[in-house]
Image 1 (tube, one colour):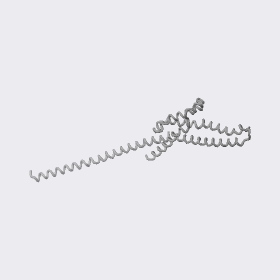
Image 2: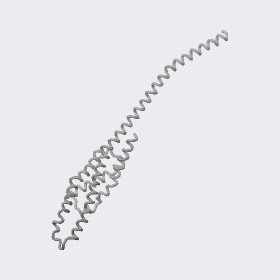
Image 3: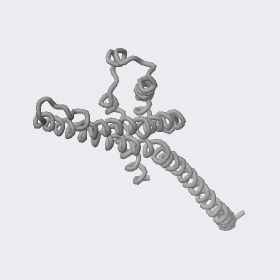
Image 4: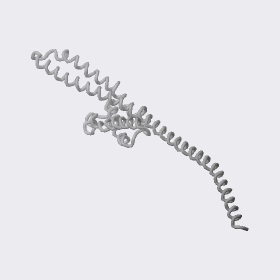
Length: 210
């Protein structure tokens, strides 16, 4: 075979091979693009589903746990502040009455009657309004415990103890002398209340960034 014929045949074979590769790439490239597009769509769908799960959880934490508890705390604080303000003002007012009253102070009982009604009202409010708020916090903490952050869970037992002692005292099943020997104060609950406020604000901020 002449050299020219060999070169011609090789050129023909290379041309046919090139055409085959071009035809193959015409099939491969669109298929690859399609698969890659499907993969990206799948990853995006997974990301969206994950973000939705996180968003739904945070929304439930806010609406079913932290916000209801924080609402109760705000009302407890408001009532406590008003109670302290009225108590201080009443002490000052009663002292003035006593200082200005004739001696002997024979109308002591009649003069003190309005102050007694204030004390009775505050005791009634403690039973009818404040204690239900405490109970609502404990019930929410118990039933929605899984919605709480780890930093909040550490306060559960102490808060339950605080509320239960109040119930025992009001039901007269714990002596005053016993109560005086143990730690029991609203002030001791402040770290828990601050955690509720801080976590609520943090969750709201996180929700905005999702």
